[in-house]
Image (cartoon, rainbow, N blue to C red; front, side, top):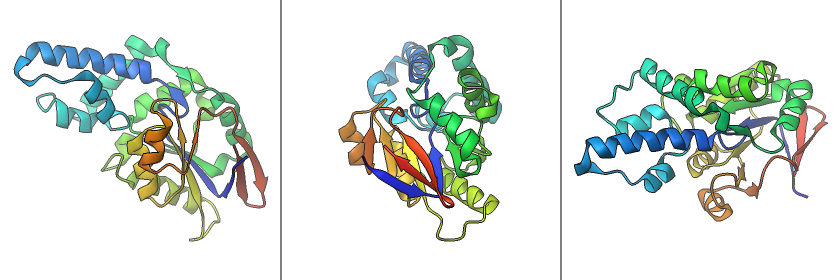
Length: 235
């Protein structure tokens, strides 16, 4: 059984703690269908689109694939709210997430953060809907709080620094990232952290190729224990 001993645990949200992929992909499928009907001269292949955009911020997806669409913060928030409103019942927790979040919240409150490509409204909405408001971490980095999305490491670096500043740990503090997407894995690696990949969305081979140090199927095998000021992760 592999083990890691770190100060902080940094989690992606969608595909890592929450399986909202069916709801998100259905929303994007609807969007691509409308685009292809309206702009037949610039057809978008849905499979390729989903492969390239998973783990990216909605604002960046709009700018690259739908540059004619308004992409202000209010526009993105409205689009993402539609995911929950129209297809929220399609979302489920990743197996083992509730048990893990309970442990993190009760025993390791200052040792973990979420770093997501979703907006604050969408990300907190998923947590409240599937787990409960009390399971939100003290450090919650969303698309609204960074200038560059994944695969840029800004989000993970920001979460790490905020956790380090609110704790007593110095420059030698360490962290591990939990991610399900190649773009997120690239962000974690670029931030300088080992990454545990979850094969909930992509095949194990893709996650390893992206730089994951380990790959697990879900969160059911994760066990946490405290070793002095650090967290021992067994999986």
